[in-house]
Image (tube, rainbow, N blue to C red; front, side, top):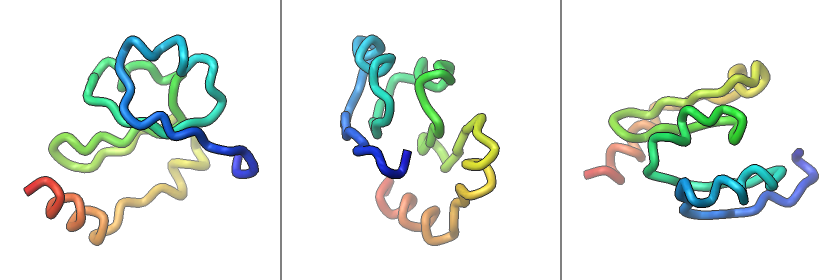
Length: 80
């Protein structure tokens, strides 16, 4: 995957499900909570609603994705 070009889809909605099913790698943002339940569509789901929460079923990603204090502080500044 690191050798692939990652497509930036920016903001997506539920209407984009057919597009997402055909993409091999992408980065996207959404406000639609239903995406959190669509585990087959993502490797990592980062929820910044109230606090930073990362969900993944990939054991390798679980071991390397870490939220630092700097990440939390930067997010707090962006939300105020």
